Image (cartoon, rainbow, N blue to C red):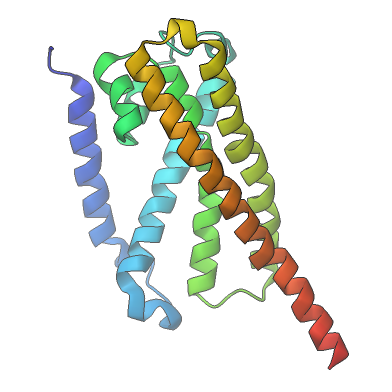
Length: 212
């Protein structure tokens, strides 16, 4: 197999994010409430930056090239391969090395749109800004994007795999199927926990305060 330029992008992006993580405290100093977990503060901001780049890039790719949804195996817009390489994991490795299924991998990056608001939620929690309008607004947007860009996207990917199982090699189909089987239950559980933490629990607290 010939050397894939995608591997250079993977290595370069890894090094860039490592350097960014080390210098992050100068850009975004942690508040007093987060100084005990400086590493976590840096990691959340680094992950937020990655989510903005990958999720925004994926959304722009489908907006500028809507016909790509008709062929997720061999068609992808310029720059999509590099974007997937930056976000490489086991499932994305097939797309990076073989230059196939880049469109399908790009669909999965739409999940990062919601991840942006999940990271913002963590930042607000670490900064002790739970009882603020900003946190409440982020909670609403977080739930909305969770349904649209996470649950609906994963459901669509599962459906696409099932409908195109005859066109996907057995190994790639197995990786995709196992990945979806793991991700869907995990995301449904996380969705329930978010609802309980940001909405159901807060309503009980409000009712308790009224009773007191």
